[in-house]
Length: 355
Image 1 (cartoon, rainbow, N blue to C red):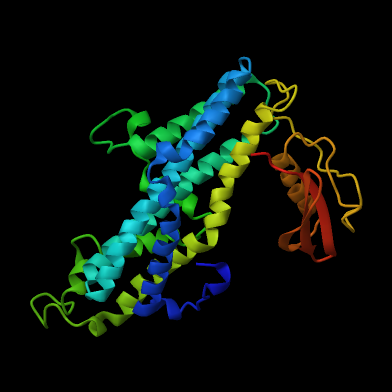
Image 2 (image 1 turned 90 degrees about the vertical axis):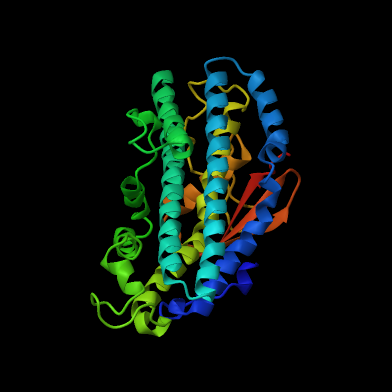
């Protein structure tokens, strides 16, 4: 579904069963675009071969670091798709729960969505931390510690099991409370949302109320949906917020893999060593930025991705407010990026990415 066809919603709208079903179906339709990764090994074969060939040309310790960094990126990308496919199945179950007026399934699967979003965001935040902290690092031991931390986190995120089955922290699943703490950075009331849903999932008073009048041995059993409309509206609203969050943050969340790939590419730049591969470049550009002929550019950028990142850093540190970005043209070996800002149009030229 194209961005211009997406609808915006007011909070009161998201309690509507029809609205929630629309959001759930929208998410599932978006997931259909990613069936290309169903055979993950086949879909990644070309990239893995290309990167492996480039890594083989390096010398240790940079060779080992580049190999491990690519493996972390590959595994993190895989985990992102694992999380989204599980949420896709939960979305399918939620649509059915709404259509057949099943309040227990609605609450249970909504809580499942929150849990999986929290775990997914925790993984992405770990990768973002790795990417930002690697920049500027040159000490082999410090880089090794950062990579080991990320490797261990991804291992737990996929292979982790209950603490009841293993005493080894390295083999324990990520705890939902730890994941929720990370999610709170993006959804401040994630903890309250999760706590509310738990009350209607556990076999306690909350879930009892969903299938009774609310008093022991009184009233009626299995009341119609309108009987608990306020509670069901709140559950649906929480579910809708989750789907809107996934929709609106998808590009932002996926961008971490572009930035990690940018770090890997720095390992392949001419003259790269462990001492300089992750060194930071100045975000002070040449040029004036007022026209295509005077577009800002970064003479010391080692890769196209680094040039793009330096463009963003320059705008941010210079106090620009960016309202939009588009491609303004293609020249010989370069692409002209146009940023619409509060100070007018600013232009950059960056090298084309070679594929």
